[in-house]
Length: 270
Image (cartoon, rainbow, N blue to C red; front, side):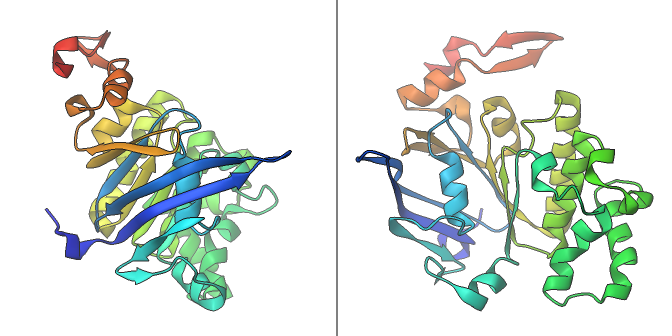
């Protein structure tokens, strides 16, 4: 197991307070600390409103924390701006929940995939066709999809395009914010297989935000459980949860046994 010196990302004491209309405030994240190692899948689970997506937005610098700091390979990136922030975005990419809204409906897949590469000067315009085909092969899509628009594809196919776009810049970390929750179970399983393969091949770390505890438990190396913006506990296996809240969540997880859905037995939590 990697040691602390090999931390890729460290979110330290992250707090985010939002002002409310009419006065008052909402604390979405309250002094959250965790780290992600290179090549690791780190999960964040919790009920709606627990602060999971706010953390993701802070990590990707779509939001600025009220308190705390973000360390990337030991460097404080909390207040990066301008060109320094733009260059950092190459290292951290994001895949959103709904690819139908995350992909520009007026752009062909070729342009969606190659726009980041062109923006960073990594390819020439004459190379876009070949690069788009390469990226489509990477996520197991036909090369001729390069000329399609997103609405001519299924939800699972669109999410593969979103993953290909995220991988295009060779990031070290990809944030997956409920990236499989809008998909059918069978499609979801194939997307998870794809993510595992890409991780093996490219040594990518994932921050996997999910409300499906069974999926998180099977996909993640470690899992942070959140409640009402607070950190409850971080564990390797949800069945080893010690806090009452995490145990309550996990007791409702179904597992497949002999072709039947069955609640995990209570003795696992005693």
